[in-house]
Every structure is written in structure tokens, then in C-alpha cells.
Length: 132
Image 1: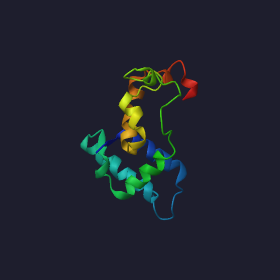
Image 2 (image 1 turned 135 degrees about the horizontal axis):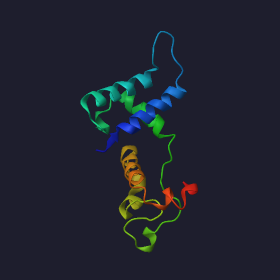
Image 3 (image 1 turned 90 degrees about the horizontal axis):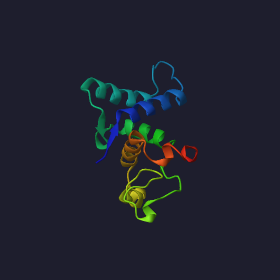
Image 4 (image 1 turned 45 degrees about the vertical axis):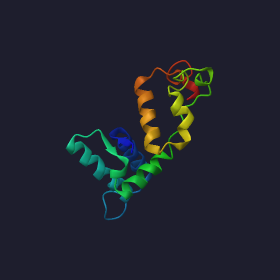
């Protein structure tokens, strides 16, 4: 099972802060509260990732709602894996990641996104950034 990085939990919290109106009598909307509980536990335990299966159902639904607002694929339509490369120069994914992308779970996709973003070597982050 894939893990969800704390940065993605934080991004989902910020998404919900911008989109979930405050409810009368409650400090946080339910999706925001569910994510905030997970985030607080991760910070307290000094964990930078949480197993997708360990997320409470309300937090998972809130995270998936945020995930739906993110780009699905890092592809910029310049695929060097079709030319025989093991790693795509355009998006930074491996041949297997490109081939099996549609079968990946949202958490698996976000893990790939995190890796290629941290590496920053793919053309999507430099010479063809405007395509991203």
C-alpha cells in the first residue's frame, strides 16, 4: 500500500480551508477537522508519511477530494521512453510508471509526483515548464 506524504496532507488542509465555509458552532468543517487530526498526529509522532490504509475514512475522502483538483499525470507529451529510454526525459517517470500509470492508486501517483518534483531533472521542470 502506498503512503501519503505530510506535504500532501497539508495541501489538502489548505484546499479545504479555502473551500469549506465555517460551520456555526464548530471551529472547523468536518473534512478539515479529519485532515487536521491526521496532520497533528503525524507531527506529534514525527512521521512524514502515513499509509493510505491508515487514514480514517473521513480524512481519506477529504484527501481524495483535494487530489481530484491536482493534475493527474506529469506527462508533457515529450516521451523518451517510446524511444527506448528507461526514464522519460519529459516527465521523469520510469518506463514502468508510464506503462502502468492508469492502474496506480492516487497515493501511488502522488508518490511518483513527489519523487520527480524533488529530483527536478525532468524537462517539465526546466525547458518545457510551460507545458506543465
